[in-house]
Image (cartoon, rainbow, N blue to C red):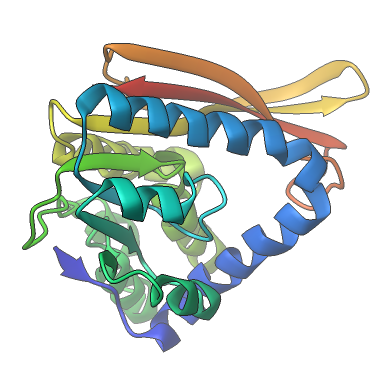
Length: 255
């Protein structure tokens, strides 16, 4: 497990601004987000019940918006590990009320510090980036049932978005690294006792017309024994993209 970089570095990479942006977008889009959040919470609960989980680790816990109520998790589980690259102060305060809820800060790609250093040095950036190997998540505690919660598409998007802004490298040039980051994350999850929820396709609409579609996950998902899918009305205010409406197609798997 790679610990999170210092907050000053997370700030420069854009992680903290993105975290605050999620909260702001939720406040603006709550009516459109609620179905997605409810479906995410319900799917996680079904997976926990199906697996009779007593220890749970959530990767990408964020603001707890898509997480089943923490009171329920704390009550049903002997240990709840909530993992993210940084936890908002409000979440740290709420978690302190539950003695069996543990907040863990970790870089789930293992690449943030190295990518920042390579971009900062500015030498053979593309060549050095494309030789990077992500570090799989191997924590020093019993994970129990693992939930990858609306996370997979975000692992490369934030980090490689920083690279594109700073270097001018294109998404096509960075595709091999993007694919390795997503593959590494999926390999790090238990073959049994895992829940994966992620958007896989972004769709940009103008009125009733689809103007553009792009994959947000570029690797195949495992089949799973329990499946779900739905559409998330992600943005209706042009805050995310230049199109009037952004929809995300979401897939859920229970292994």
